[in-house]
Amino acid sequence: MLGAALLLIIEAAIALILDDSIIRPYAGDSLAVVLVYLVIRGATRLALIPAVLYALATAFVIEVLQLYRFVEVIGLGRNPVARAVLGTGFDPRDFLAYSTGAGGVLILEHLLRRRRRL
Image (cartoon, rainbow, N blue to C red; front, side, top):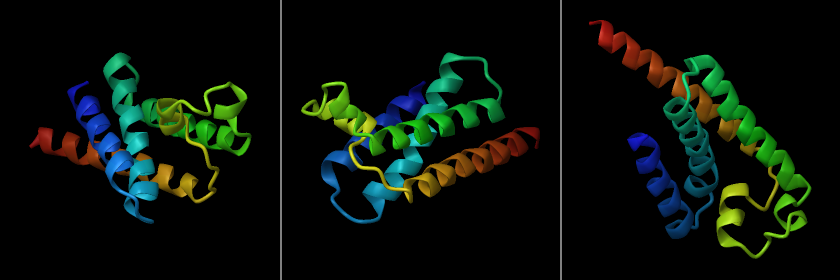
């Protein structure tokens, strides 16, 4: 869970400080999947693949909800935390960013497991 806490701080810094067209929208979305994955692995006993799939599915569902302005529908349109966590603008390119984050998790976990065997 320490990794998730550190990544949450990084995500918050990206959201609050950066206003660019690459790091904030794409790296931030990739890291969001990693953050959800770390929380799932820290809070459950799920194996690698199911945890990655749940993290990816969570990101995909939230992205689709943005298409329907979910934050406004549930009355949290003025809440900056809800807007940051749930997002406010649908962008189909985000699905690629989320998938990249999930792929990164799989690669890093593979490398870490391989290193532990040595």
